[in-house]
Image (cartoon, rainbow, N blue to C red):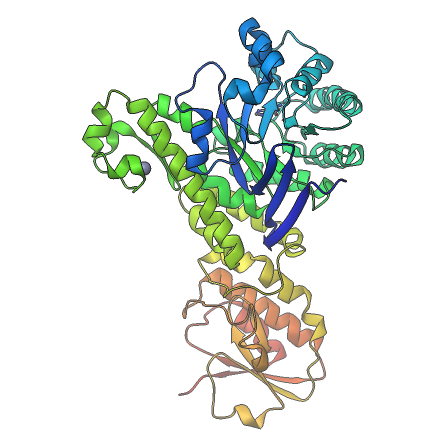
Length: 486
Ligand code: GUN
Ligand code: ZN
């Protein structure tokens, strides 16, 4: 693998990276505005002022129209669009998935992308939709793999080459595809055919696709979530290791009078106020926006502003080490996103491998936080703690602490840990005083595990009114449970 991608900061499985392309270095995670070569509400060069560092367009649309094709071949893609930064080109696969066929071969479209000077080219993969029969997913994947291998032979230098991961909703096919593509050594790995999942709010299934694909890839490979442009899911997708996004949403939503926010979408009709301070929203009232002649363009501008604003916040959260807090906030915007969050934490054992050992204070944001990778890490490493003699496990300091050989703090969702670790990440977490069922359950399970791992020690657990849970009874079978007294 060439070193075109350098990771400079990490949080969860998310990262800030530097991607080197023939037209310059791009900081990731980032979103590539989709440029339609036929219709441009906003000029490509102006995209920089919103925060865009790289654009994406469709080479098949250019190839198909004589006038565009001739200009692109003569002057190059960058002159055609009027943008001198990096440009990624898609191949017509999307048209293939919508219309069932395209008038170009894989070899022709790859060579065309190279000739017009694309920075990142994409072969003619087959975007197999979710839930198809396994036999179809397998046979289309076989064709995709042949085309990708062919493209990899054609492109030997200059243009970066993307190898889209397909496999429908079959996790083993996604992982297998990703690992075979890794061996072929692509520069960027888009996760394909996820648009139908996002359109129908199937975020839990999207999480499965992302994680299974990531498992087959090298952790240092840049990953593009194809067709993902709504800012409300950036935090989640970045936390799972996606680096590149593309947004046609800014324009498609504007065309449909929809106003994007990082928590969802409004129909312009229903907006009485503009809950945003971008240049569009601070210079118009909701009524003015609705009646503006250039309403579609203004909406597209607003949509782009909030899209890049959210990506900057995601990057800041990676630097601050609180990306998972942002993910948990964002995923409360819609119950289907919450399903995505819950699904993501079923992969905490995988996330834990990439999550930094120490970062800024862990904030407990609700029952899902009980399944964060940090909590699982503590549970997995508990066998490193050896306790001998007498031990008191208490949440609140007691006057009897000094009578015990060991003082352990009980803090949901973690459980019991030596008091000396109280200021160390993640035990210095900010948590709610009255734990919810999930936090308490996790903490009590971990406490029981710790006691069982240290059968020689003699444990006293100081119970409190706020720790009501059926597992307290199990605890009473292996420890001396006493009630807290002030
Ligand atoms: N755009 C959205 N999804 C896809 C995909 O799976 N493959 C390609 N090439 N482009 C896409
Ligand atoms: Zn705005």
